[in-house]
Amino acid sequence: MVRGKTQMRLIENATSRQVTFSKRRNGLMKKAFELSVLCDAEVALIIFSPRGKLYEFANSSMQATLERYRKHAKTKEALDPPSVNDIQLEHLNHEEAATLMKKIEQLEVSKRKMLGEDLGSCSIDELQQVELQLEKSVCKIRARKVEVFEEQIKQLKHKEKLLEAENAKLLEKWESEAEGGVKEVERGENLMNYAESSSPSSEVETELFIGPPETRPRTFLSLN
Image (cartoon, rainbow, N blue to C red; front, side):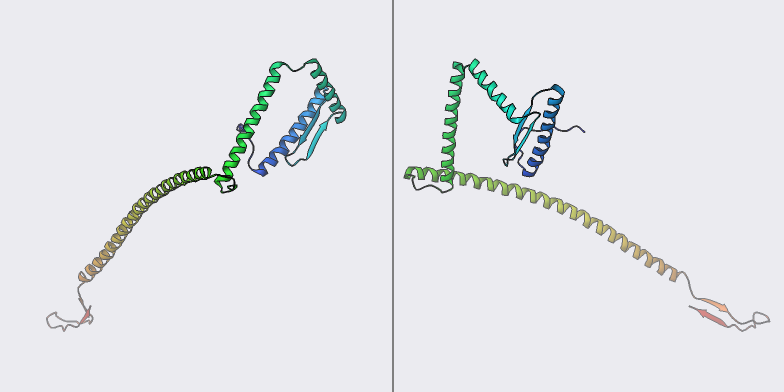
């Protein structure tokens, strides 16, 4: 079974995030070990968990590898001084970061005001703006609430129609079965009446007599 592509974003569920961290951490350390063995490379791996726990791997000495890295970084900086474009880019990045931080602070202040907090320093105009914004928000919320109610009413009406149709079918089936039962009862009664009417009382001669028929007395047993 082909696994789906994992989206590169933060895993919201804390348990799933911890399980994924453990699996991928072990896989990363395994790859680092394989790289050091197969390619005879000097590998140092440092991992800090979300809770601040340290995990590390080094095929030699971690301290020696870090010192080697620092020396290499200093040598590279000395050989490759930052260019004008790099300085301008870094300056722009600082300006953008400062702008973003300012916007975040403004949003936090506005959020607190919407929640009714930190209103002591607000002027009348600011309070009126907050009030108008809240009234607009309430109007939108109420409109959405009405839409939700209408949708629920439509669903309930549709469900009611389905139940009524099903109830009508069940009632029709019950009446059909009841009518069939009545007909069977009537048919049975008719057969009983017909049997009774078609079997008249018969007379059976019960005494033996020798002689001419004219002078023979008759004794009959009446069977009802």
